[in-house]
Picture 1 (tube, rainbow, N blue to C red):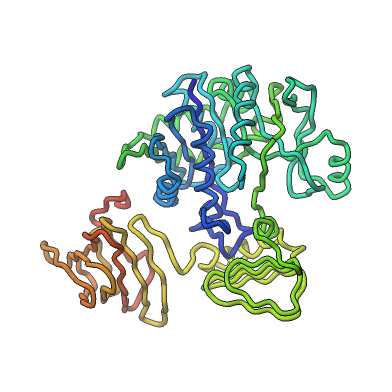
Picture 2: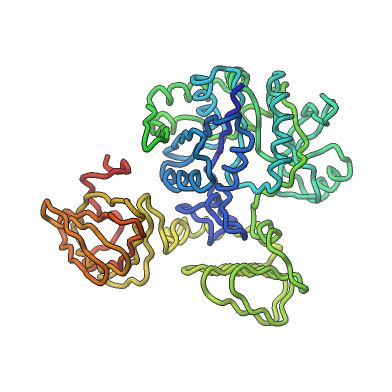
Length: 481
């Protein structure tokens, strides 16, 4: 039997701004133990995958290389990796349909998909595996299975599942109905009744049964997904299967969740009550619960000095944060943005990111440190006609052969050795404490031929310093179109 984990990694996590941003979304956020949510999801995937089976990740094409790095960091070397790259988000129904068609094509209609979100936190992997075994048995019996979370509070931010008839001695039940996010009074009634579970957004079903049910209830999704896959060849890159979905065909698919498209319409839906811990880390309040509290119920990540402060979260990345006389606040400090909010308004933080996007402010999209396939760069300072960056290139990595129309660059190597192509055909080596100058209009390329990180300071000068002033001629990461 083939059990294929399918990881959906498409959410922006705007309620966790300013750490989660469009270019570095919530799945890549590091938890207090230093591991990202995506890394932890890959570890769960490895636990439930049968043998050395395939693990599918459906994500935006911009996040492929960062996702691949997390796959490696999670230690999944014995598993096959298949990355399905979306040109844009179309919600969960198209993503799951595409993954199911890919699984059915390679492993047949009886193959089981275990669909999990990349931004949920589950610490008890053994319990998750146990619940998944229960879900797999139901999927083999012809059910579309969802995981329900036993509610611990009258939460108004989650959808609910009303339980129907019991299906087995382990507590699996038919789903009577799915219920939208309730108001406080209704949520309290759900909690006291004992007949409702939180809807986790995780699923288990056979590829064939899912597709047949979609064909019955949402045929346009299956038809569109089939056409999209026909136009999207699988490439093998560095041992990884990469499938970049055809832009126009995928954009034509409905923007709809699997809950609305299918689960609420089908009569063969079952729910497994989860025996594991679960959090969707949907807000700073949820993340705060992962940090130990002090005697005043303050929770601190990073450096902080708290005087006469209670019930407050302080999340700092680099600087010392000091507070005096505060109560019931959220303070998040990054190198280029600070969030201060009342704790009871944590759900409204997403409005900040939305407003920044409307204002076209870069802080909704990128941090000062930006990850790239070859490493990263950090903007240290910028002003009229100049920008200073710290560039880190991973061992063996190579930037594209490129040219800039409007800026020149001065590179100073501060760690490692750089292999630089600059105008001419022959590259030269630039050692630590040496530099080179790249005039505007020169074709150039940077490589790290060593076994240690290459660290450089780049000083840009010119009339226009935007990141879109790049003409690529060759690129090993497929960015020449």
